[in-house]
Image (cartoon, one colour):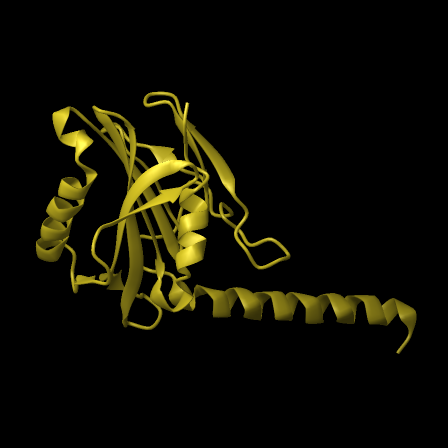
Length: 196
């Protein structure tokens, strides 16, 4: 084959490989979970890990390195919902914020009745993470049906409670498809959280 014909042939082959990779990668995309505002947010780097995207919340004065571009909502929460992982942050203010264990117990009861196929994996436990005293628990749940496979999408989520003071707590929920869940990876994301 002459050099002039070799280049177009290689381009066609490279395009075919790229299209096959994209088609294979879409098999785990949950319904409504694609970040349509920024489809490349959280794209994997050459290392295979997600590229962190800094998020700074000017209303509640915190920052975190998210797995994709976070979007603030009118209710004061912020969220990233990607093809295989999610990160949501809500702020609770008032006298109930001081008891993170009670908040966690209340949330478990609420999730048990509202999250499809909810299964608690761990009880609320206290630990130090990123320099903060944190309460956390883990659970699995059904996040809908895959449009590609028609099967239920099971997410493993960890909910964290990080106190700022006696009247403010951040509630951070990180979730990822269960077959990709790594507890250390979840802790690593939340350990980038900082009150400002």
